[in-house]
Every structure is written in C-alpha cells, then in structure tokens.
Length: 622
Image (cartoon, rainbow, N blue to C red; front, side):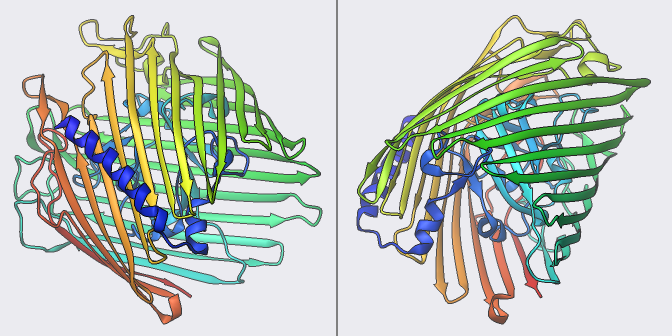
C-alpha cells in the first residue's frame, strides 16, 4: 500500500506537469504562482529568490474555508498533522510538523511570538483563534530559530490578522450554521454556529478596526462510548486596532485582543462519560512601530499577554501565565543583491505554581540574504540565546538555492543546514509535578534538499526531502515522576511534494503528499503517508465550486485503558464546497458538505469524529 501511494503521487505530479505544457495563462494565474514570500527572511522577496517552499494561505483561500477552524485549514497542508481537528470542536489539539511535537512549532500573530507560559510545553492553543480574524497565514517549515528564537524547530506559523481598508467606514459581517454529528447519526439538527462582525476604516492619517466573533458547537460527545451525550464548545473573541501614520514617515499601531473558550469533555483514562470542563482565556495588548529610511527600515514590537485556564475534573487545577515580548530589528538593503537584518529580542515568561516563577531570554541575531543576478541565492544567519536559567545557546542557518531560468519559468534547487533549540518550560523547570530545574534545552539539527519548478505561469511543482535529529529532548519519566533529558536521539525524515496547476483561467488544482518517518519513540498520531487534493472551478460568473479529497495513512496511538500502543487504520474523506457572489460582489453565500460519504473512522483512539455534515452561511461587506 505504501509503495502504491508513493507511485500514485509521483505519477500525479508528472501528469500535471505534462498537461500544463498546453495550459492557457492569464494575469490571475501569474498572481497565484508568483507569490511574495516574507517569513523565511523577513524581507519581501519573490518566491523564485526564496530558498524555502513556504506555504501561503491568502485571503481568497481563507474566504473559501469560512466556517472551518484554523486547525482544520492548517491540516490540509503538507508536512502538517493536527490531531483532534477532525473531531468535536474544542478537543485538545496535537500539532505535529515534520514528525515533531507541538512544542517545536512556534506561532506568530502579526509578527509577535505567542506562547502560553503556564502550559507544560509552552504551546499556543489554536482553539483561542478565530479564522474570521485572519488575513493570511505563512507556514515556514524546518529549523527557524535564527530568525524566530526558541521553539521554532519544525515550523513557524506566521498569522497576520485582517488589515484596515482605505475607505472611511467599512462593515463586514460573516455568519454560518450547520450540523455537527458523527457518522452513526442522521438527524441533521443544526448544532454549529459562528458569527463575526468587523468595523474599520481610514480617516486621514488614522486607521481603526474593531471586531467581535462568536462560535458554538454541540450535539457531539467527546468520546464514542457515550452516545446521546453532548460536550459543547463555545468561544468568543474581541479585537481592536488603532494606527497612525506620522507626517515624516513612522507608522504606529496599537492593538488589543481578548479570547475565551469553554469546552466540556469526558474522562480519557478508561473512556467514560464525565461532567468535565476546561476554560481558557487570553488577553493581549501591544504596540508596533515601523520607521522607514533610505535603504532601510526599523521595526519595534512590544506585547504583553495574560493567560488563565481552569480545569474542572478529577484532577482539577487553575493555571496562570504572563508573557512579555519586546523585539527591535533593523532591515537594511545595501543594493539589489544584499539584504541585512540585525535584531534583539527580549522575552519574559511567568507562571504561578504556588508562587510566581519566571525566566528571561535575551537574543541578539543577524541574518543576511544574497540575491545574485545569475540565479544564486543565499540566506544565512545566526542567533545567540541567553537564558536566565541554563545559559547560552548558539544556533545557525545556511540556506542556499539556485534558480535556472527557463522559457516562461524557472527550476530552483534548494538546500538547508540549520539548528534550533527548545527551552524547557516553566512547568518542567518549576511546576508542581515532576519539576527539574537542572533540565537542559533540546537541540535540533535539520537538513533539507529539494527542487521547485514553475512553468508557463500555470504550474508550480516542488519536492523536498528533510532529515532532522533531536537531542536532549525533555520527557516525563513516570517511574521517577520527574521531567528528564533523554540520553537517546530522535530521528525524523520525510518527503513533501506539492503541485499547483491552473489548466485554464477558471480552474485550479492543488495537491500535496507527505511521507514522514520518526524513529526513537512510538511516534503516536503521526501518519506515515498523507495526501490532500482540491479541484476548484468557476462554474459561472460569481459561482465557485470545489471538490476536496484527504487521505490519512496508518499511524500509532496509545490505548489509555491498557496503556499499550494500537495501530489505527487509514481513512479517506471527501468534501464539497459551493459559493455564489451577490450584490455586485459585496455578498457571498456558501454551502459546504464535509465527509460526503459519511465515512466512519478513528482519528484519536476512543474519541469521536465527524460524519457527514452540512454548513451554510454568508459574508457581507458594506
């Protein structure tokens, strides 16, 4: 089966490339393929000059996924697996990138690191984020600690929130509702709702935005063993942004955010119905200043975040964390070939374990980008991490690429050698259960090599191999009831293949395939093979339809009744989406159907998954 999947994906890529030779082109096709990439260098470079296969999810793709969660959308991309995203909304999410764990993925919101210091592994809970608020997402995979610091070991999720418009006043409203049932149910009762409203505009040098959103799902139990019982989830978000453009150039932005969710859940140990509940709240405030000058730009970002959560269960607990981030960096362009970035980052994480505990991180860093006129591009950087608890850690990145110009396109060769680090969390160092202040940071070494081919402004195909080594990783030793650094080594390797083909102006085909192999532990919930494909078509003026296919291969999960590992069967899901524009494009209505064949499958052992469900909604801009 594995060999068949590999051959199938390779054949698909080759077939797409051959057929694209006859493809028609237009300005939209060029726009779709000739992207500007920011995340891998912090400079706006054309994709041809980037040494990474950065994934960008833009406004158009986000609009076609209205009603979904951020986790659901990310789960469609190569190299990413988010367990829990196919089940009851509100389930704990496991974010795995390139065979790594959640603590190795760093989330940025508007360029600022967001991590909950009170969590055991310093992860950001994606359940707090509403997709309605997102303008774009860039996913840069691989070791990125030189640019983004601790935890950026397997991926960086650079999330940009929606920007203001040039109009004095604009109101945007989105709303949707749908069913929320397992494959064994067939009542199709409405049990999922999401609503959002955003008001913003520009008044001379001043711009402003205020937004609220709400989501609720019910009718689905956390566990498959508790049929007829429901565990609801609810979330609300409030955002504001105020910006001012000074006459001499600097731009000042102030912002604030409040996010809260409440999720009922059941007892995972023994798989029993239980009246458990988990609530989490985040409050963020910050400011950003951008000042441009001849050949350069200075950026200063400062943010303060508070996190609080309560767990009502047989093992109750309350958790509080605070996070302060201040970062300043200078971008300077020497000429058309040489770009430089010099920065300094300060982080202070604080959490309460009976008494407040904290640590600080101070990182100076340097990054250089060389873009030659003959195709050679080099991205190189280094960072010195200074941690108040464990001392210094040095990381580096070397990312060369070479682009061969072809008729109406290019062929790019890419390679990367980079290191990264993951600092122990406050819980692991000072927490109430198993804390060990003698922990050392985890270290990662990543090697990548790949090819990207762009042809006729209608085809982009890429294939990339990665190999990562994890040393000194932190684990919980249940025998000694203590967090420890492992003496063993984790090795992860894999292949990521992607294709985007525009056979004619009104159609687009996207597909990706991921092979992942992790050795050194049981690698639970990480599929060895994964495929996602989507064919979209403009059926008529303002009418769009899309067919999606997703395959998740076999993987291992832990049975928490017997505490043994169990193999999970692969499964395939098919989704449909239709939308229609009205009122000269100011309004869009949509209808989506997920898991149209009502496949019954297991994502996480013992936990519910969604069967055939329908969702309808609209987006209106005035």
